[in-house]
Image 1 (cartoon, helix red, strand yellow):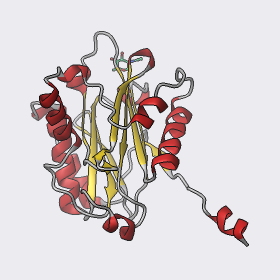
Image 2 (tube, protein in one colour):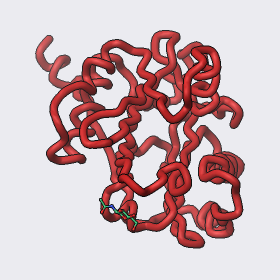
Image 3 (cartoon, protein in one colour):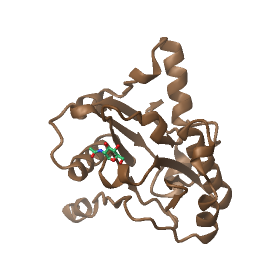
Image 4 (cartoon, protein in one colour):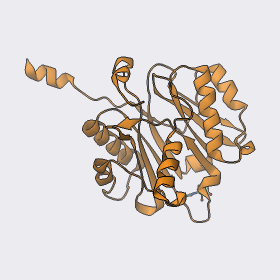
Length: 236
Ligand SMILES: *[C@@H]1O[C@H](CO)[C@@H](O)[C@H](O)[C@H]1NC(C)=O
């Protein structure tokens, strides 16, 4: 009988990769289609606006990624693998004014837009008196060790492996984003994101690390699979 209980405890990973533009929420889609990221000073400011749009139209917490020119996505200079978080819709991806804009749900409880990962990073950078471009922040030692492993052969299975390991060892769900810094391409003008900030064990639930071949990996915690679990968590 014991073994039946154990075998039912299966962590199911439902991930999807954003290459197809899809959005089942028409109002969200329409609003994102009006957004022109070129009008913002920084791509991350546009991502913040996309996050705001999603939060206003759908309840819960949302994150956003924006990429100028879909070829950066199709040639995998930028690659992400995000969990489909209930309730539906969990994502909305559009191509608007030559920018790919994707918003994705991260949790049930609404978080202030001011509480974002970038804000947290900025605080840490200011405290440590560091240069932002050299940000390499991975406060959780398990993740620091984890991301050290091996060069990337297949991006999808590599990120899946990291996400799965983080989830099994630290609990919760982890999203992954990989940006390849090409020489001659200034990533900061082509790419931006705005993610909500979640905690793991009262530390920032993210890991930003330079890994092999000029890739920068961001592994970040999101909310919980059920509303009840998330309500129980402290430190939002
Ligand atoms: C991917 O596409 C972008 C935009 O066209 C280009 O600047 C970049 O060099 C490409 N990267 C690779 C690895 O092909």
